[in-house]
Length: 267
Image (tube, rainbow, N blue to C red; front, side, top):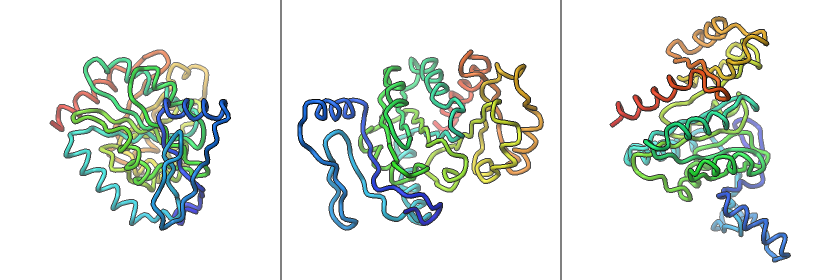
């Protein structure tokens, strides 16, 4: 049970798409294996098909300590890490696919996918040719620094790479958990309503980049871009905005150029 936000999870499973396929193959073949549920003080044992870590207590103080460890790892290896947060269905995975497709010839990408269940998003990212690790949080509603730390052990991103972390779809709990990222990027689709920053101010206060996605649908929905930005700037005056459509590609060039500039400035 999470003492901070109230969510709970018996286990978190961290695995690559290849490990997941092998896991399913073993199931189909009737090969006996079990999922470990380790004692809180016992050494953790990875079951077939993925690494399982016990989630017993998640306190922000401990999370922040591990986030600083992650941040030091990223800085030492010159890794540009982005934590993408949003409501479900905002278009995060499509945005990642578009971004990777446009930049992977000049930048090295690695991806951590966060979802409560399934390998669907990790499989989509794997199809781009980029290494990816899926973190399934079970009943948990967010990624935390410890999960990222374990996922990094599997992913081993090379020095100078870009790490894209797609958080669990939720505009509440992920706002509390620093993962060690360089920027927290909040994504809103225009189908969600322009009052999202007013209704979920903690997330927008914690983020410094806001992507307004699905702008190709603006003629068909009641969404005021200026009003949305005004709400966001009330809680985060330094917010940087990108208006784009990850489906059509409109506005994506500015987003791609920002990534290049951030990497160049960091180096």
